[in-house]
Image 1: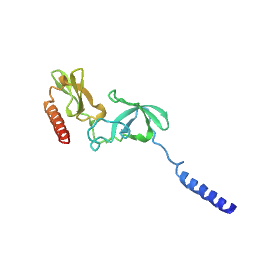
Image 2: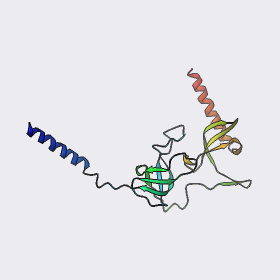
Image 3: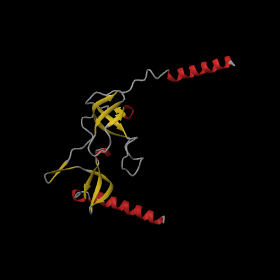
Image 4: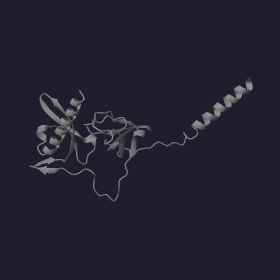
Amino acid sequence: MQHQWEEVAAALRQSKQQLTEGQETEVPISFEIGEEAWLDTKNINLKTKSDKLTERRLGPFKVLERISDRAYRLELPKTMRVHNVFYVGLLSKVRRNKLQAWENQPPPITVDGEEEYKVKGIMDSREAKGKWKYLIKWKGYGPEESTWEPKANLKNTAKHLKKYKEILRKKSLNAAKGL
């Protein structure tokens, strides 16, 4: 019986050694303060209608502080209402294409002396105190840059409003058919 216990103990030691063998060599990604990083959207609730079409990562965001070797504080826009410290496994390095001389974000257009950005689409709507606001997805910007805008600010987006209202109408008709 003693011999069997020794064999079991040896087998357990061997399996534990095999499990921990490669773990010492694992080096986590590290970022410098001021460097930019992409943020994985895995644990972030984005208000989008389709998970399939939702971006897989947000940013890039500037690294503000190294909390530990496994956590970093990022500079997030005020529209993102999430804690700004993230596990390093959710971050990835930004690799800039040296051949691309421009940023992905288009510059604003000036209309009547005011800056305007192009609308990619309307993602959601809500009513507050009798006034409607729309969640606007801006062309060339990620979902973290989407903003709630009152209808008064959407003078030049009639086709997007019409398309959004048509989608809502179709959804309500489909929901009514199910009753």
